[in-house]
Length: 156
Length: 363
Image 1 (cartoon, rainbow over the protein chains, first blue to last red):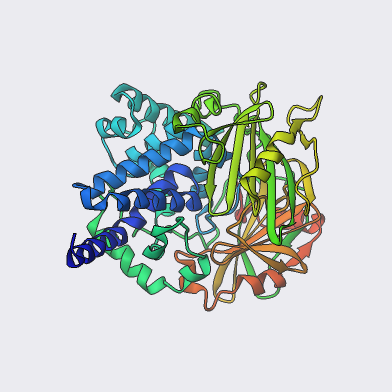
Image 2: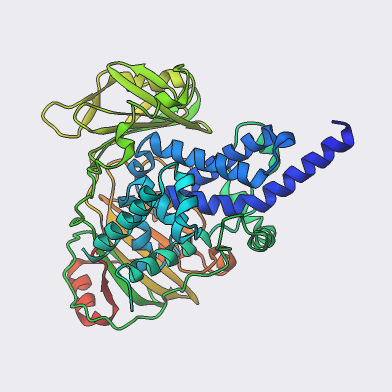
């Protein structure tokens, strides 16, 4: 790639980064419950995309996949974020929403991911299943069980 | 006709939008992309408010391929007392309560008690801090008995790390043999290293260290042992790295807290009271040490401060849709200094005299 091409590519990547960063952090924060972790996972994903930028045909899809891989890997690595001391990270939430947010920690990571994809991202079950690398029936079950558990916790 | 989960979904969607709406920051400088990814210091973020707002609008317009919400919806702020049918309850907390001083007006009192939750995990903490090799260092070791057996995270140490590739001890995410544990060097974020495993009794053990090398973390992990006869307690069989001192150990208290919302000087604040963790402030490399009311505290995020004294932790924050927008005239540090302690009798009288202010969270 010549200098002009390299500069254009770098500029395109910077624009892509500016456009996608906040939306990605929002998504991962909801999935993991930790803003700091979300920022780190999103940064990691951008580094991966950047490394293959010149060959990436569909950058948003590539980024989304990299982010989801990071989220799943983080969940597999353990209930680590849940073991962290809880901290008042969201002081501006009204109490009932703050309670809902904290109760999400009581779900399994996959239930939480499924609920975020269904009710925040507004995905149908097919893409949820693809994102979670499971069957559609499993995705439906994760959403249903997650809601049932959340409802029970809210009522207890 | 309403469906069984309608109200749950409604609250869930509101909570998602409320949390997502807090991300209006500009991304960190792209220059950090070439090296180790690092989020920008929060102080720097505060200087980027104007740019961040523009970015948020752009992001909202462009919209991520499968993102419905642009994050522009704000959280309704509770500033007025609402009518409650709840009978005022006697707080189970026997802690020092703080209320606003002259000029402050209480608008709401929330009492929460999650001790009845069936899945509330117990957590043991063992914390060290000091200076190692000229650098500030922290080490927090936790053990919890999270009873969620359905979680795939229960397989930590058996499968999850093994999928990460070649088991090289120095490689974050890899399987490492530490003492008798088949542990996972979970991740390394900036200078924070996480090491964890699940022991044969199903106890999750996690080490978080900053200012320490991988080798030092491995050495600490190898010396972690359970205290005989105790379901969760841990200890180190050998001394920690020189320079680290024990700063606390014990079981985390049940989640019980009281939050007092109040108006003062044209701003809306809350002060949250809860039992202190055995390791003060846990492990949070993203908070900034500060002195509050003459005792050690931390600045957390934007506009919130926390401090601990006599086994009680208080957190004072600002109720606002965008805290940064009110920072120039709402000073949580000054308000924290102006809070007035009340004894238990006065506190109970306050609850009894103003039942309309009291809300019981129950979870």
